[in-house]
Length: 205
Image (cartoon, rainbow, N blue to C red; front, side, top):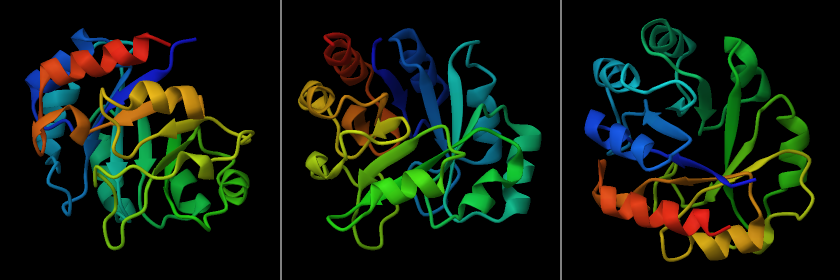
């Protein structure tokens, strides 16, 4: 089975349409004001309304107020929630929506314990740890820190590009890969040629 691909940090309708046309399985919308790829509810609505069937729309939240998440869900089509902060398993499960939990991986991160704690998640998204930054750093972490037999699907993120994604897939065998900065011409502005090159490398597997 081909590794699934999520293009995260979409801020423009055209970028979403390019990602879909080039074979992305999911697009990510960032509802976190601390990110340069942050979208408003109206922006998110404009983008999500253009996404066809069988392509997932993922909403990314970082320690968000439940009332804000409910407001987004009431207005924007989201197929999956992504929690990228310090949310507990109970907080993640409180919205009756499928979710994934992002883990910022350090040398002492116990991913086996996370898989147990967040067993209700659809997957763990593994990203690079950078002090004070909640993701989107463009940094690669040591993939050897990922246990070979983790009890749930792994979505690999963190510094992926067309130049290293084939190596990453070969080493980690993830269920999916998540790319943002690696397919951009500027923060929040996707580059269709870079998306195409990235998808081409994924398809080699």
